[in-house]
Every structure is written in structure tokens, then in C-alpha cells.
Image (tube, rainbow, N blue to C red):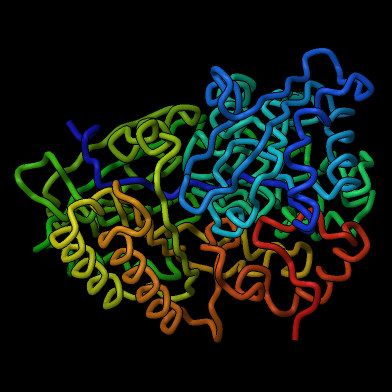
Length: 506
């Protein structure tokens, strides 16, 4: 019944790695890309493919973007079949000043990617391997494998790993910014489980980054990894299935009349969330349920015994939600089933998504309540914005803050809630509805930042809009160290489109 709740388009962890250089030579190099990529002396590996927009089946043969809002534009795409060809492409682009982006899952939605015009798409679609080592208790994942690709092999081997919230997001892209998600209270961020990376540097060299090899670069890759290279695979530690792989989930719907008591109850969980419990709430337009239009929805997951789960969520069920749906699911299926089974709809590509985000230490019910009112009014005034949503991700920080702050470049380990304003619309980005939605999102970002508990705007870089100060993405204390790494590993700044590091910072 709820597969048609069209208002919800839940936030998905992004994937986009790569960059570009000065556009001074784009006009010269761009028209010659077909020749450059087709020349016989390139000696591509068997299976490497080159595509050009306009040719038959271009969209189905190349990785398309999740969001087309302020998207990059390409004159060609190359899908290497071997790592050596990834190296060749990076060297070629660096030598001829061709702007490029490496793409795995295609979920990078920052507006910074739109600064790439008439460039080359380095499509990692051939690198989707998921290799579980049961003896070492590790998994090695290719550059284009998604979270969804990893679930079944790991589950079959008796293991789990923290992931993002949507199955279609690229695993490596979801890693490099930090990797928040439902299991972070148990296992930490995704980067806290990362053991090593194989990556192609700006010089076209294939190197390993780990705690023992290129350790300083490994520090920077865990939180700011979009700035330093193209990751072709990564190895992670994995964990035995929590609760035997059985996950309790519940989806709840609250009406407009219930939203105040619901959000006050949600805020009461600040600092008290059980490490296994994950809360994801969103305000959305509902097209099907009993004539109710704007609703607050909560989906909860808990890999533990059902009786304990019912006890933990009792503050919500005592509110007598308008609708309640319980399920017990295996770990490899729970993301697809919870949230009223909207995962596949959420993962639909080539839609308009204009995203803003704030990380907060405080759970502010007055802000949540006023935001509900603003969205309700937006939906009434501009029907073309009813695919938009307001999302609150509340995940335990227990295992996250247990990791020393300076061990990785991720700056916001004490974020209690990730607030996202996902503005989606059916018209053009310049339509009245799109402009109104953008204005509401910016207004809310400012409001939530003021009550966040931080003395500056704090944004999980993978959820960034793209117009924030780099200190909001990487932390002002980390910037000098990250900039020095950039000078060493990418002095020509060819990786500069994914919420890029500045050349200097006050």
C-alpha cells in the first residue's frame, strides 16, 4: 500500500571520486576526445569500452547519475576493464588538461560536480567485485560495487559491515567521506572498518594506502578521500552477524496533528540512544493513506531480540501512530524492506535533487516542528515540489566517538543527528516551485546551524550542498594538514570537483 508514498525520497550516501584541472584547454581537447580515446597506440585492455553521448544505448551502457541537478557534462565516457587503463586515463587527462570525474555508483550530488563541463567520465562500472575472506575476516570491494552488491556475499559468509542507508549507493564513495549509517553505534563509521585502499594517484601511479603504507595519505583518505585519487578497490574488516543476522524493524506514520508530540519524543532520545537502535524520520507528502497529506514517518531498525526492541520503541508506539508496520528481516534484506519498501523507488536515477544538510549535536524539537509547518505550506503552494522530504537521521555515536578524533580526517564524530533538506521537483531548476524550495532549504540550514550545538556550520561532506566553506566539510583544524597532503599528492589539482580542498585557508 505504501509503495506509492511519493513524497519520500530518502537521502542516499553519495559516490563520486575524481576531479579535473584548469579548463583552459577544454575547448581544444574536448572536440578531440574521440580521436584521443580511439587511437590505436592507447593499447587499451581487452574489454575496455569508449562511449560518446548520442550513440545508441549510451545511457544504458554507462553509469548514469542519481541526481541531474547541476550535474557535470561529458563529451565522452570510458569504462576501463583493467586497473592499468585507469592509470592511462588519469595520465592522459593530467597531461592534456582534460577535466574528468571517476564514477562508481553515481550518487555524488554536490553542486561542485556541476563545475565540470565538457569533460570525460571515467566509469568504474567494470570494478564491482566483492571478495570475502572468511579466514582473515575481511572483504575487498571494487570501485563501482554498491552497498547492495555487498550484502548477500557477506551474509552468506556469516558477516556484516556498516553501510549507508540505500542499497544503490557506491560502497567506496560511501566510504571516503566517512560513512555514517545504522550500524555505526555498533561498528563505528565505515572508515573505522577500512583497512587499506588501492588507488591511482594524480601521477597515474597505483599505490596502497593503509596504516602501514602511505599512512598520512590513508589518514586523509578517510574523510576527504575525494581529493587525492581514484580508488579502484578497498579492503575492510568485517564482523560476525549481530543477533544472528536478524533485524527488527518498524515503520510508523504520524499525522499533522501528532507531529509536535512525535518530534518532542524523538528529541528525548538525545544522548540516550542504544548503540543498536537507529532512527530515521522524514517529513513527506503522502499520496495514498486516508487522505492525509503531509506526514511524519519514522522507520526504526534494531538487530536484537524483539522484546527488547518493543521496550525501546515504546515511547513512539504509545503515541498511537496512524499506521504501524512491524517486520523481522535478515540483515541482507532489511534496507530493501523497511521504509515501506521504498528503497527501489528512492534509487531511481536521473531525477532533480537539490540537497542541503546540517550536522547537529542537539535534537531540537522546536526546529523540527516549525520545519513540518514549512514543508506543509511548500507542498500546498507548489505541488511540483511534493517529491521533496525533510529527513532526520539519528544514529548512535557510541562506537564512533570511541575512535580517537585525530586518527582519521573525519571531523564530526559527535554529530547526534544529520538533518537533510532534499528538495525534488518535476519542473526546471528555475521554476517558481524549485526556487521556493531552494529558499526554504537555505533558510532551514541557517536555522538548524544556529541550534546545532557547534560554533560553526557542520556538514557531513557526503551530504554537502557544495556551497559551504570547506571548514564545514573537513573541520578547520584538519584543513592545514589536508592541504599539505594535497600539495604532495595532487599538486596540479586534477581531483578538484568533489567538494574540493582549497589551496589555502585562513
